[in-house]
Amino acid sequence: MTNDTNLIASDIEEYLRVHENKDMMRFITCGSVDDGKSTLIGRLLFDSKMIFEDHMAAIEKDSKKFNTTDESFDLALLVDGLQSEREQGITIDVAYRYFATEQRKFIIADTPGHEQYTRNMATGASTCDLAIILIDARHGVQVQTRRHSYICSLLGIKHVVIAINKMDAVGYDQEVYKKIKDDYREFAQQLNIADIRFVPISALKGDNVVNQSENMTWYPGSPLLRLLNTVQISSDENEQFRLGVQYVNRPNLDFRGFAGTIASGEIRVGDTIEALPSGKQSKVKEIVTFDGNLEVAYQGMAVTLTLEDEIDISRGDMIVRPHEKPQSTKNFEADVVWMDENALHVDREYIVKVGSNSTVGTVTSVNYQTDVNTIEQKPASKLGLNEIGSCNFEVAKEVQFDAYSSNRATGAFIIIDRLSNATVGAGMIKQAIEAKAAPKTAYSDFEVEFNALVRKHFPHWEAKDILKG
Image 1: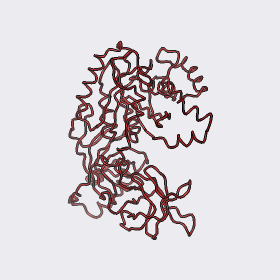
Image 2: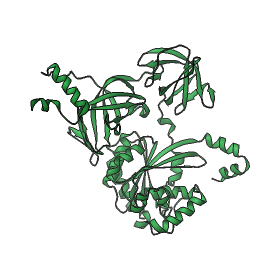
Image 3: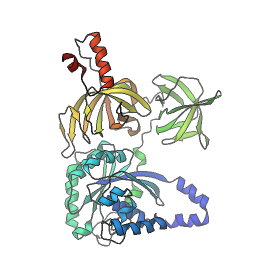
């Protein structure tokens, strides 16, 4: 932070320019309960000198009341801000923290370790580039270690750092580190994670977090912060241009633009585009932003595109290049993380939201449920809270998507309950599938209408049972 500090003192505008152009990384910390996730983030912030003095004073005061580490300063309180979290000494909700080094900027998602909060962990992981999975050196690989590792793999996180924490509690024993490393590597062979790194740390004492540990000279690698600064994530980005239209901007008769955030790729003035699902083509006339017009825009930028031709584009449509079209279908297979107390049921109607495109859909079948402890695929007819499985979907209108494995931004979707409007599940599309023929029924016209009426007002009832009664 020395160079940044000098720039702040001498040339604040230059500091802001340098800071704005730094690479951004989002990462998540996860693992079992009491593995030290919040303490690790607190140590990163503390040793990186990213805590204001008034915040430090408040934490020192709160440490006297909520301390869980027997130290004079409980670093976990820098992240665990909810009253219930401090009283129980655990993380309940996802907490986001920001810090920066001279190399890049970071957004950290600190997630709960309890199984009942798996949905919170999945939410935090969905936008991250890297995961730090903590393992308590005293206990080794646990059930939640496997669960969170599988979810990270499912959500397309390609870079994982296994931080074997509390090495001070085992006397900084190298053999303990090697045993846990071997156990995790054996389990990780079943996962789709390309880059796995290991680092022994003590978040409480600061060993190998920001600074190299003098207690583990046998470890030849870099401390955790240096790994975070050097992991290359730019190659993970998809280069195909995708922009989901979120809003049609029409402030007056002379301006009509299509606003959205670029999900992947880049676009330039003059490029030929195609609007889906209509298939109409035009060329980009202007790229309008809050800070002025641009000649080129990239992934992650919020822009408004104006076109040379007046073509029909609405919210939920996708703008792409003609030679880089995504898939378009009403039937697809997807992995689902179920997040609601009420189980996912086949043939019940939900709102399926892919990007900004919302449509009504049903789960036509549950292919299997995954046992996250063994990665075994088991037969299932429904999914309960925090369960993960593969399902087939049928939606009312075509959705445009890329397979989640190739483009996380356009392959993800959420499932919304039609009555409560609550988000009940998250999905990752795997592939388009063929539509199944509708089953033949002997229902009369009256029965069909009555069934629709019952399903509308009483979604948990079955009309056919009422008619039989």
